[in-house]
Image (cartoon, rainbow, N blue to C red; front, side):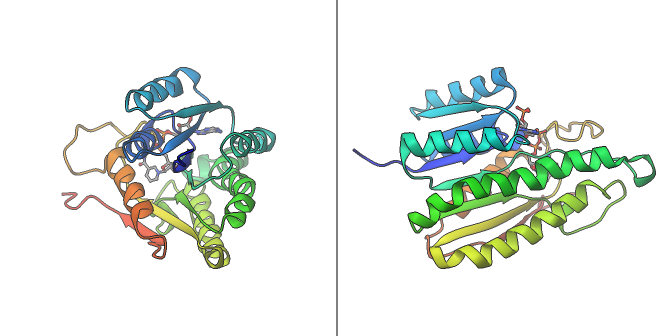
Length: 236
Ligand code: NAP
């Protein structure tokens, strides 16, 4: 049987994750699509399917470790080998510190950091066994920079950078690439306070991030773009 590249995309129901799923479908990857919104994920699955690509949907909350473990076990039972994990799902509550709460902070840590830890843990032994794989964490320039309203979100992405950089050093001996992609603002529904702007080139598009993911995967397996900052070329 011909073996296809298998990629898992979290947060594939909309925004950047949806664009990544569609872009990787165009590369011919078999796709495992994760999200909570069944109808939105079904729409993505239909697009992927129209490109002639096999996919499966996994509907559930990534803060539920059992959901992650059971889903990954099913994928391994069905397909054997996981090639790529794209940890994209994330949330941002951009309140100023005085208006923030520990519950909002914990909620963001649960999705932006602990779900990435749990998902990576669930796939890593399969990748080590096969001596290869690529793990891409969609971080943010907020993982490197500070901004007003960022005490919670920026802290989660800084933590994700520390996790990703250390993991990269640990897993490279198994030919596993661990990559952080750090976009600036992207034109999605992520931040409800930000007005959606038409495609002006002044803000990144979800498709720009998806192209970067495809590019990072397509590099020879012996080469790793371990950290990519992505900005609009001309934001003025
Ligand atoms: P988005 O449009 O709000 O989409 C977020 C995705 O994450 C959705 O598919 C959502 O799934 C999923 N998700 C959130 N919480 C989840 C949970 N508890 N369980 C399962 N899935 C969950 O956001 P986006 O702009 O595409 O952001 C994607 C990633 O890029 C995030 O990690 C974000 O931090 C990062 N990023 C975004 C920007 C930006 O300006 N947009 C900039 C830099 C980095 P459901 O809708 O199905 O629940």
